Structures are given as C-alpha cells and as structure tokens.
Length: 93
Image 1 (cartoon, rainbow, N blue to C red):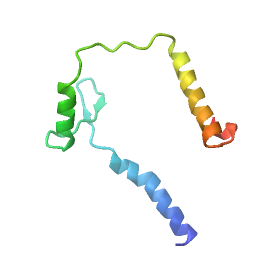
Image 2: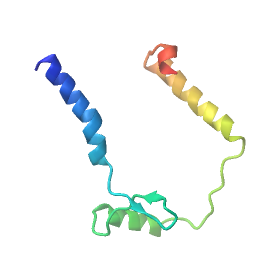
Image 3: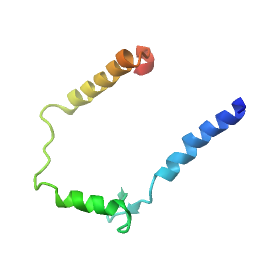
Image 4: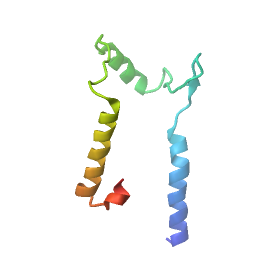
C-alpha cells in the first residue's frame, strides 16, 4: 500500500468513524442533548436491569477540593505516560 493511501485510510478512520459511533441525540425540555437508546435496542434490557438493581442512595462528591482531585488525576496520567510508556515528559504533558 502506498504512503498516500495509508495516510488517506488513517484520516478516514480519524474523521468519519467517530461520527458514526455517535448515536442520535434527543433534546430535552431544557434544551440539553441526551443520548438514549431506543426501547428495542439490544442494550435496553441491560439498562433496564441496571436501573432495577440501582441502590436508592444519593451521590456525595468525595471530600476535598476539586482542584486537588484534578491535579492528582493529571499527575497519575503524566507519571504513567513517562514511567510506563517511556514518553518524554514534555510530550506526555
């Protein structure tokens, strides 16, 4: 396969495939877009089972400041990129 053809295939996959991966979005009353599977979709049974097993609890955010959580997540991602994959720290950031 020629280099130009290989480049075309990569660009095709990077641009068109994500568009097809996104399902139809439906707008709610407040204008926000939601993504719900139709009732006859194969995943509808899985979603219904998950909702039936859901615990009746409220979600509480973890204690602490959100910036601390975001910083620790970035540090974990950066360290994994540098020490596990061997990327340059500037590229990993």
